Image (tube, one colour):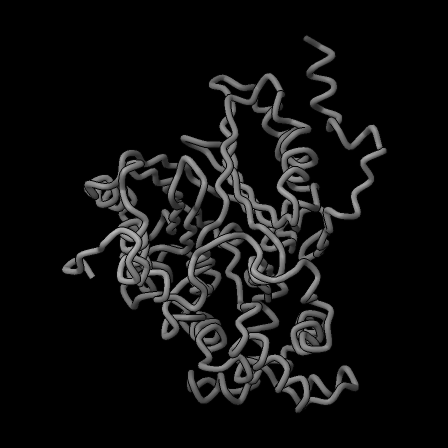
Length: 406
């Protein structure tokens, strides 16, 4: 690709947009509401999400046994233990841009010297704000990295960011709208070439370091996770006879529908999430800003190069933002300084901000805080239904107190 010469406005100059399942573009290709996660097509996902905590048999144990060489009872036992210890969670990533939602992330930087008690108030509010579907607590060049799916950007600015934006402890907040969702939790998402879609990315070298860095997931446990996350078809992930037994729905129809939704139409991705906080690991995050004169095709090439690096757990590409992408890796099993140096050696990269995350608030609406009994609680909000007549929706309580105390 580096040998190609691009002419402004030519088909060749836009060819890079066609290399992925969905070319990066605007926010929302269909009309809002054209697709819903509670539709019949999503029955398999909903049944598994409702039962896997108790019945590990909803997974395709036969498939996993064939892939790993482990005995079936041992596979079921290991899956149940990993869930009970909150080491893993079954999660769904909706392809929100396809059916009417914008996906907006943002970073928050608090002022130097901010009282830790003040940051704790922000932590509580972010953890409990249902609109914030994904969020990370960080330490370093920024203090929070949060995400929100919204149909209307003004609702994000007014109801999610507005309540605390003018808090005296806030230095700045910068929006990072998603232009390309490349990788999340080591699984490739939609904005990758077709042959890399849904690939679970983890090299043998990193696996050795991963197994050494923590003692809660062993080699066999990981082999089970890898088998389920790396199925060629989503149909290989589940035991549809068990789903039929538990739900009373037609197993063959559920199988047909989930293949249509995940494999063919690519409207959602289903995967096993590894809870790095429970393992005592952390994510090193790199917020990358490229020079403004770098053309879009070159930015895409660079992100594609990042996609070929297995050390990255997450790869988010941004549009209409000060920043171009955010990358993360496990801090305990990678040379984090070497990775930063590698990034800064790109002539196109102007600046790299670095922060470390030891805690994630939610994973696509699924809560990850098990201290208070909310583990896996999922709330999918709809910003069209917010009550704008409620005076309490304008300012959150701890921001009111801060303003009154000025």
